[in-house]
Amino acid sequence: MAILRMERFYKTHFELLESVSSPIHRELGNEINWQNRLIGIKGTRGIGKTIFLLDYIKTNFGNDKSCLYVNLNNFYFSKYSLVSFADEFRKTGGKVLVLDQVFKYPDWSLALSEIYDKYPELKVVFTGSPVMRLKGDNIHLQNKVSSYQLRGLSFREYLNFKTNNSFSKYSIDDLLKYHVEIAKDILFKVKPLAFFSDYLEHGFYPFFTDKANFKEHLIKVANLTLEIDIPYLQQMEMKYLAKLKKLLYLISEDMPHVPNVSQLSSSIETSRATVMNYFKYLRNARLINMVYQGEAEDSKKPDRVYLQNPNLLNTVSLNSPSVGALHETFFLNQLNKGNTVESNGKSGEFFVNNEFTFKIGGDKRITHNSEDTFVAADMEEVGIGNKIPLWLFGFLY
Image (cartoon, rainbow, N blue to C red):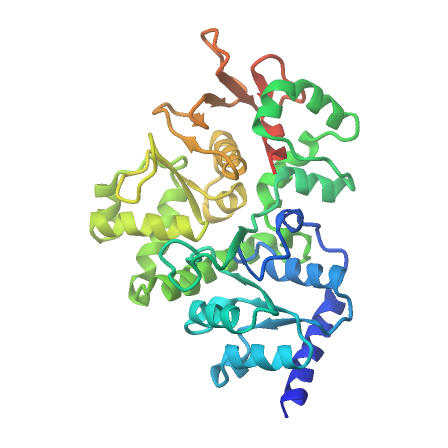
């Protein structure tokens, strides 16, 4: 019976592998240490976690039954335990168990910890919501899990897919020192600005390749995050969902949003403390980004609030976002991987890595001679001196 049951899971596994054809290559795969025994990959809905896993399996295992993909939405796991399933899998020759949407399983962290302790010969790769806690106060997985974040497509990844190129990523230090040479090398092969507006509208989420309406799909993704992921993982009662949605919409209509917590609490009819909690929920779900003056703290009011990426801003807001709001959102989104970004209290400016000031926009000027102040200029193909094309910051990952 156990072998027959496992064969049904394999049937689904191979059908899904057959459905994967020419996915967008995600370079996170090159950063993961696949030798680790417990690997967690977090990412928002719609970011491509399932396709990422299936691409990894297809590339590295093919038809080898030593690896198995399982979605924890399967009704089987409402009756049978994940630990016993892992035991059956390894007894039938399984070596790598790939679990999608693991947070749908009750006591998922305890189950993963038990599998890790009981079956040292078994590797587990799992995905889940960014709201999940994998380290810190998750006592079950401390010192066991290696955690990674699958982000949306950078402008570089989008450009590589659209133009069939293989442009490399650059560090922030490389851009500051060699941006002229880097931009010229890229321009030798492609005109990046010809693709930049499209990226801001629909390039962050890999499902832009589907024929379905992109904005309708993204609205569905955002709503599922609000209606399922946040309430499920934050233990928020559904009756408060409307207030959370309204807060997100109010932010989108006034971008970049300088929060007046008292006014927001009045608008959504809740307390100031609840507004601050909702900010945290939306940030953890990767629906907003917050910028602080100085070190970020949950109890501290952010200086500015942004939608998490330009695609969300273009979709959630019914008004056409300003160019400045879109470009600041883009800059913050692309730098948030591997850099610290703070506010210096001035509109349209960011303080990066406790060292550099960036002014966003083509009309910005550096009014004093400073090696630490830069302009991220829109509609510039190649920069000069401390003026760097805005699009080039999309090559940071």
